[in-house]
Image (cartoon, rainbow, N blue to C red; front, side, top):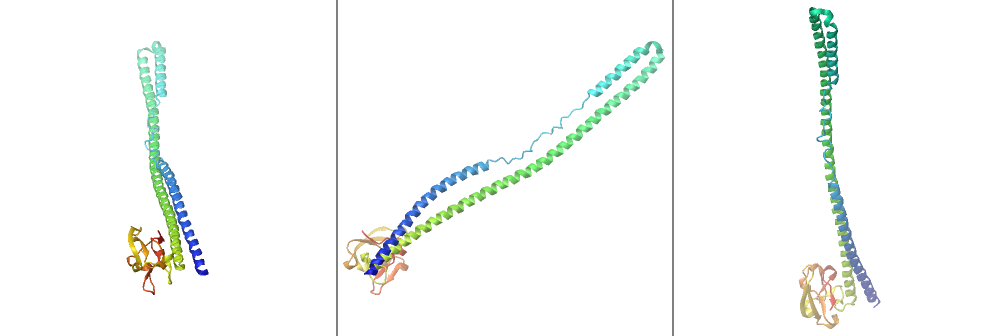
Length: 289
């Protein structure tokens, strides 16, 4: 008697513990779902910000500031004007004293001087043009080098962006799987404890039809009457309401399965020739209704 009472108390405690675990698993699962939703929204926001980062080449289409350099002709023009003015002054001063032949000789000399001055001016312009071409070539080479460097930087940034986004997605997926599995395991553990509690109570005789040596709940079709199918379990097992022919197994209407219709690993072959059922191995609850 004391053993039966202890089994009843133990079964009840185990059933309550299992129920608490299942309820807690449901609460935590809902919290995890909300947290995951918030995390997904935040992660999506971060992904969008990350994806909008500018990784374009900053050196594309840069202007060659040396390309439009011009030749400074002011010095050459000023030198030319000075030479011409000097020649005119000399001609005016020498016109009266030199005579016709002297003027001709002087004009020849001055023409040669003018030609020399023009050559000097032309040489100065050529030097400026050469300097400008050198600067244009140097700037073009510099821009090409920067553009190639910028292209490499842009590709590295794009690769880094894709790599980071893939890593974030993988981490998010792994976290979701772990939390889901943890809640699933907890729910299974709670369901198992509830099933065990029914088994313990059945073994102690506390559930009427659960009485009998050898454990398990009396569930042989031959011991029942007024059998009616009332539903299906999540796994597809038929659930019946029934009464026991022998009231010593329990009075009133009960809910359960038929031992000849369920997986045999949950069936206990009793020495009295009637089957019993280990409900902890099924997704059907044995109870009085």
